[in-house]
Amino acid sequence: MAVTLKVEERATRPRSLRNKLRHEGKIPAIVYGYQVESTPISVDDHELMRLLRENGANTVFSLDLNGKKVNTLIKETQSDTFTHALTHIEFLSVNMKETTEAETEIVLTGEAAGTKAGGVLTQTLYTVVVSATPDKLPDNIEVDVTELEIGQSLTIADLPKNDDYEVITDAEEQIASVQEAQEEPEADTEEPAEAAEPEVIGESEE
Image 1 (cartoon, rainbow, N blue to C red):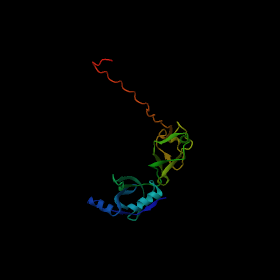
Image 2: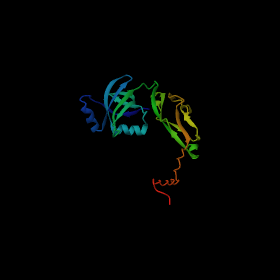
Image 3: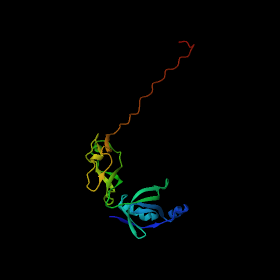
Image 4: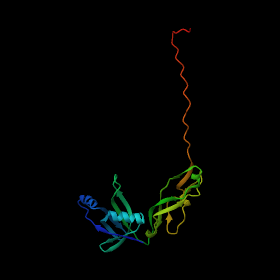
């Protein structure tokens, strides 16, 4: 199911218009792809952030372009280095009946048995690439680590199967593992040996 997002077409010149839009709480963007000519647009920052929080990064956004409904996915974003605020967005128009590829987050759930025995759980892979029709793309994939013992690991091959999508990432990629905790070396508490007093040349023994 697509989520409706209001957009407005925008001019691309002069470049100062981008900064003006941002000061007005809007994000410069562009939409292109399936049955759509590349079109510069702008979206309301707060509205987009709200929809992303409620629906996830792989949401299908239905944009109204001159009265035409266009189903899109967020293809790429740019953000400010310091504030991390979005500064530009690319919306990709998609055919809802054709499969597409997208990244989705891996979320670990449960408490690994190995951590209860003193081990340390480490996640090494945080996203995977999946293939599905746009409306079936998952926002995240949950992985239960409850049975993971010390010395064991989970790979892409261990992900739960789902008829809605196919995982494209290499099946041998490791997601998480439990290893023994590294013991810190004990501090040396021994007193340093007293240095021998130097012999004075020419001094005779009494």
